[in-house]
Length: 295
Image (cartoon, rainbow, N blue to C red; front, side):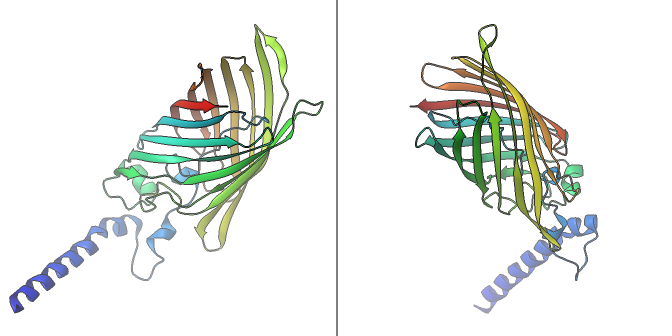
């Protein structure tokens, strides 16, 4: 019995020493010593210092409430030297009337492979830089304020972000809540070109998220977008520029260009998107989605 207890204590001692030694590489890389703030304070909660799905620029709103109920499943490929990422994302949208709708969306599964350079730049504690993650859950409300009048179509959107994304120690997600809201405006131009209607649109709003900076626990940002859409009964082709501007100047002012093409099928739809980071978000992304729709 004594020998068994001695063996168990020895195993625990070895495991404890190994666990402590496991972080020596991180301590040496970032100059951490006992008595300094914990490792969490080394990770900057900002879109430029996290994975591509942590604090992304929201999809643009076009001043119009979606009329069809839908479930969307998307396969996304994020290209960046030192951090190629792939993920599966989902979205559920349900309009209660022609005035209000709700949505629920997020990344269901993510695979990443960081280089040592990217890993250390983000102060991540994932030694090999590879792994899988689960994203944050977002839920929001869309309200149609004006439609088909002299004043432009007007939609208000309010969305909350949960802190469900993991892992934080690999600097993939922010492990903090946030929210955003915006007002979007558009005006339909019938038969704009070659049988296609035109829809210029723009939006402005506010984006806020919690940080781990004890002096400034919240980052606030002005959110914006502008674009033009060609559409008919079968196609919706959109070009837009969007982003938000945080005030801390810690790579917190991401801006992206987005090309989107949506093809309506008999009942459902296919969508292709190309997203190119213009500032503080250094990815190029391809999204392929299938939408199940019903009236």
